[in-house]
Image 1 (cartoon, helix red, strand yellow):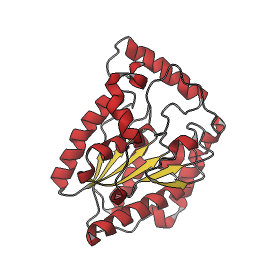
Image 2: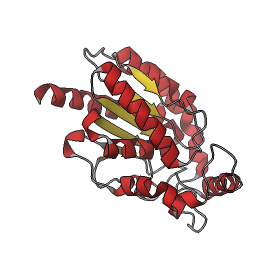
Image 3: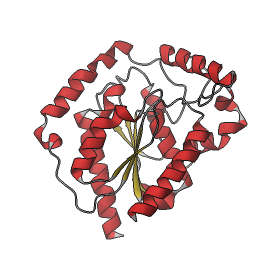
Length: 253
């Protein structure tokens, strides 16, 4: 998500719908098959990227599930995802290349919300070392298509960046030159062989689901809260299918 000082709030589902997170997690933990997933031999390495204002801890449940499947999981190193998008992508690009080099395999990217937009940028820049991409509630078509309270938070954080607080995005990230390449990455075509998936929910209380409809990815609808996409059983089934598909594609050339 980039800072925006002129964008108008976009209608989204009621914010109270985000209170579903606990129930979504409970359903995941109650699902025996998902709780103890089938271990995958030669599983792809995975890079996880959290959403706006969130850190790696927000994806802990997903990380443990992936590890039980046999994946080598690398976290982003992000404590609070509020930095300038271009700075974050540049750092993550080094991490992606190191993970691909050390594992000797192409990397599967999973990002939630803003993390999905960052992951998409990585896939555009280094498609030869990325084998798959899943974006969870990521407003790639319009980064500021969010609820009014979230947009106010973005603008408040951007003001801190304007005051040169380190590690924080600024108002210029929305239309300035610093994030011009990143904005181009969000609209750039993705290789068909990548098997990109964009997950959205019409009951998302944070992001306008229409902004998540990436025209270059397979779009999948789930009935989930925005924050709960990282623990929702439907989402895990989508991720599982995407992981299995990219593995089969790799084996079949």
